[in-house]
Amino acid sequence: MDLFKKCGNLENVKKAKEWNVYPYFHQLNSKQGPEVVMEGKDMIMIGSNNYLGLTSHPEVIEAGVKAIQQYGSGCSGSRFLNGTLNTHVELEKELADFLKKEDVVTFSTGFQSNLGIISAIAGRSDYILCDKENHASIYDGCRLSFARMLRYNHSDMEDLERQLKSIDTTNSGILIVTDGVFSMSGEICKLPEIVALAKKYGARVMVDDAHGLGVLGEHGRGTAEHFGLEDEVDIYMGTFSKSLASLGGYMAASHEVCEYVRHVSRPFIFCASITPANVACARKALEILKREPERVKNLAKISNYMREGLKREGISIIDSTTPIIPIYTYSNKRTFLACKLLFERGVYVNPVISPATPVGMSLIRTSYTATHTEEQMDRALKQIKEVLEEVKDVNDD
Image 1 (cartoon, rainbow, N blue to C red):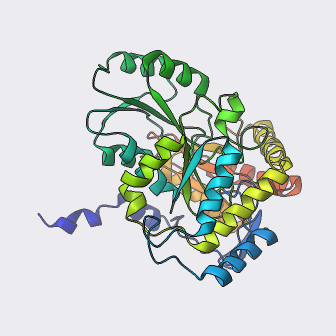
Image 2 (image 1 turned 120 degrees about the vertical axis):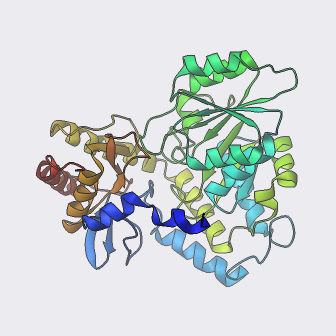
């Protein structure tokens, strides 16, 4: 059989293009912000992860420009060899201090962070307990580790304990990995229960806080701060591409664990380091987060305003307490059409269809930033209500 035969089997893509509702790869013509220009149209942006609204902050932009002037455009090597700048080390120290951990290791992307952490920490004789709705990068990190992965039902603590009970720990270590905030639903993990089970069965806990940093906790430190469990999580993983307005990722843990990962993690050792501009932007965004914790409160306030508006209009949502608010559209075609109509009316949202959701449970994923206004939310809500009414009878036939 021809290796490339599978390349012609993108049925959902073909259907979306046939229906003239293909929703992907729209081109931005402006900075990310609460409103953007996309393909020449003014657009309310409720489909990004720019949670604190810092990607267009003048101080963040200035920091990136100055870093390029000082260090050049790239590092031309891995952190392990010639690619470590003093600013990389300073970022790691600042982030460790903010997160109240002994040490931090930075990676070139968030996806690569999960690959690099999990594949280094877990091995063939170990077990990884993985929530079924964890991010794809966690699953790929598990595969790269060659550890035995056991998936537990989403946020089902009885199922997690059942699987923990089944493991013989005589020669095996156990890592429980969970998203802090689940990226599609906006739900927060059951961290207190996970920590309790980890203690009971001698497991370690890793939290992917990509959507938690800058979102949860009084100071924006994330899921563990939200629950008052900052001393109980062994490894935090996070990204710079969301609240910290840049690109890259990190792990925060004990110094011993970080040193181990630095010296054995293939995705860390064999990849070029984060560019100077990205490091500078992340550092400046972290500085702003620390001095302006009210951004976290503003984010919660505007998200709650929109959530209550959607409920008031009778729109079916996944009811979380985070800035991620998914709206049920149920069918793939209805989802694509709704996204197209909203785009045409100046509102950008993200489609989420099967197999990313169960069949018949497709969603529009909306997400909000600390710099959105209530007036923008009112305009977006009006369009969402009208479009959902227009497409309510559309099915996948």
